[in-house]
Image (cartoon, rainbow, N blue to C red; front, side, top):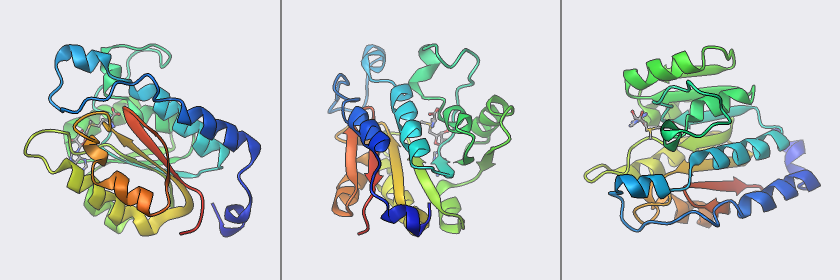
Length: 223
Ligand SMILES: C[S@@+](CC[C@H](N)C(=O)[O-])C[C@H]1O[C@@H](n2cnc3c(N)ncnc32)[C@H](O)[C@@H]1O
């Protein structure tokens, strides 16, 4: 997105998509704890509706580049329209690749990289890279229109909240003037992966459109 587009007012279809996104999390249960039981995992809101909504917004804003930290680790071996147990993780890389935009997905676990590469092999616009997300973001040279943060798991002893904040800070100077940030697992453990990042995004002028299983934040005005 260039400067000129940034000066244009938010058009009606974008406004409508934004209003729809604001209602997405209404039915999602929020858990204060993070060690969920199998039953609680099943009760959670699922990523699909958030991914699809973020894609609708990204497309309406003529986004070009998506970067994700933490690729899909469950193969997509069923129709996208169906919901199965594996969909609790998200299959995010597959959804991003379906947009036709330029997609960079980074994961530190080669097993996950292999699964994601195989799952998105039909798409020519997706690159799944093996490496550390923070290091990747620091070196990345292009502009990012949508940043998806879904790496360090919400587990005891893992600095997930700190690292997701650091990932945003590493990406900050590459984010387009108008950009979307999506964070997974914000419905558990007092904000989960977004616990430290969400207050920073608010302070920096992001509009938190929804915060349930996932958070979708939109920056549409200059700081
Ligand atoms: C919850 S999974 C991602 C799920 C995926 N986004 C989806 O929707 O299906 C988290 C992933 O983050 C990866 N990860 C953990 N630390 C990382 C790091 N420092 N850099 C990149 N990826 C990392 C893990 O290997 C794991 O595959």
